[in-house]
Image (cartoon, rainbow, N blue to C red; front, side, top):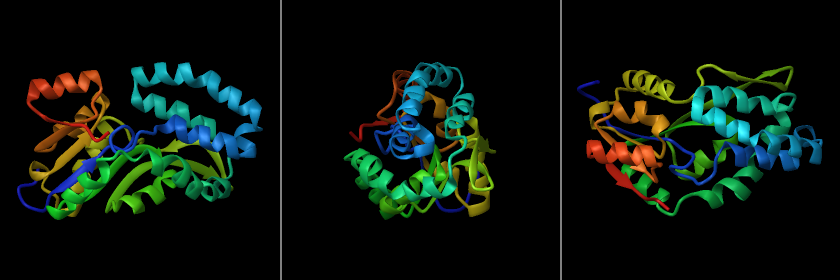
Length: 224
């Protein structure tokens, strides 16, 4: 960890700052995209995949992301971007936890750089990041060929240990002192990113993260 530099607050997004997840975003696009749905047919296909998504997520968050985003294969980049503002207004903005704005505001008052690390797709959260006043963020990126999604996620896939690696590189590049920094997440899958900062915080934690936080005397926060 760096001994000098400024501090940052690193946030997971889904379940930590907002109540939505990747499935909600996919469902939104499925209702509006001719390609994603072929309207009802594709919706039925998406619903049929939900149990597999859940099992895969338990096995590996990285594998889950790569499997999940195949659902976007064949989608037009222009159409995905076109609906992103509507996604923010209808799905993401109403899902912001009540305590989220205050938490971010407190971090800004302390001079902490506000940084989000998320497994969501970049074009789906641009408006949300601006609305929340986030300074920097990193998200997953779909590969597009000739303007259409291949269903492949461009590396690095933002999940688990990859987030911690990105944070270390970011801290080195931006002169961030990780010992003085905070990290916030709701999931045990983010244990690597929580473990490399001086102030890990379990937010709306799942059972395993809550138990880990209690064992290590980490702060536990409820933003709901």
